[in-house]
Image (cartoon, rainbow over all chains, first blue to last red; front, side, top):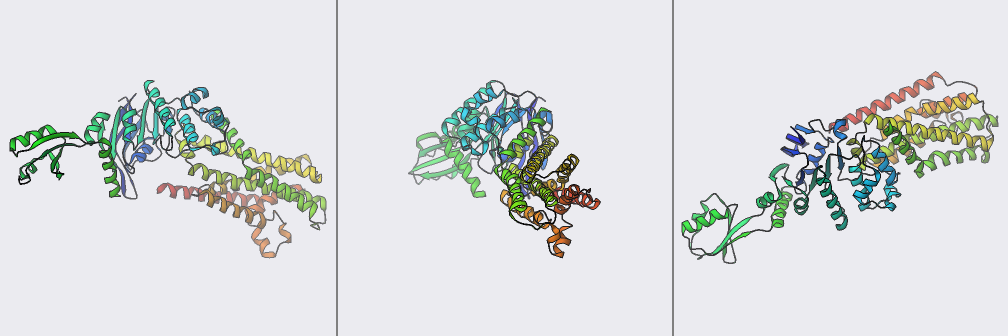
Length: 300
Length: 245
């Protein structure tokens, strides 16, 4: 039981609407995990429950084997919320000093500046006058202020330009190399793929896949076998196989979709349907992910 | 302990940088004080007594304002901008956070009281005994509690705009109807009857009594305590209702 984060059968509903549906997973020290999913998949709600900001309707959330709201847990975590949180009326340096004072062993202000790329100009600017990007940098610094073991980011790169985005992920990789555990949510497959060692794929409040980026990509990208066939030949025999997810004709070719393309080839030869010019293809990852996203939107 | 000190410091810095605070809680009362004791002839029978009386009115007016407005609006701001949520995941306990806010706010009130008292002494040469200065200052500091409770009640509102609007109206109505701008005695009878039940009148009256060689009446104290209890209960009730959703 050395899990940094452990969720057991966690369910959350708002006004009878199920937002997170029986989610269980755990995180070992040093893991970098992406919670990937389209908007409305329950990512933010799950993160809010991990942070103890909202209570699960059912199930248990434990951080370092304790309740999320305990002080011992708070000492060891840092977070950057989706809503950029700044305190008006204070300058960036004053805010950093203030938040550092909450923790027993904070990082030094200099370290925070180095890690997050805050400039001297930023430091003397009042929080309410910061640009979106500067606010993000400040929130990042605040997340790291207590030198946390577990860092939780909710959609961290929203509103960042490309260079700050790169810098952000570079720092995250460095923190991961130091052995910190990191959870972040994103709706970009690319980000999850680049930065995480493990992806939890969320859709409609459920974890639909949990694995390395390679495994997830294999799961969601569709594989097809396509071939040319005499239009008179019936494909009925192929329909009988469970392995086949979908069959359609396009430009004189027949496309057969399946997770096990080798088995499909076997069927084609067994049934002797006279297929020629056979191609095995893997669909584009982004398209597949996009499809997942759009099907969810229709549901709403 | 360091967190508490830092938090107090931060609260104080924030208030003094707030232009609304400087305008409404310092400039406005001093300006009104100058006008109603030097520019407008109020036909007061005893000028010296009137100058001391009105100094208390304006100090109470200032402190009441920063209790209702500064605290309430800031609470709404912090919540809507996600700052409260962020604070909740830090090791800072709710109790220390709240205590620091109250301590910071009290320090600000002390500052306002001192500045306005000095302004009164400089503008009109108001001279009270040391004990009177001290007691009236203390009364205004401690008597502001129901207004702080009212501030936290306003702090439960969802939008900054609503909170600002409502607190402004409440502030002005309480100030005028409670005899802080014009003494209650020169108002119509019904206004006087209503005014005597308002927290603002009872707040002001304690200080008026002190500078007129008296002591605050028991009913002033009781009414202020009753309002404090009412506002605290209301805010507890509303918070529970909000959390239930």
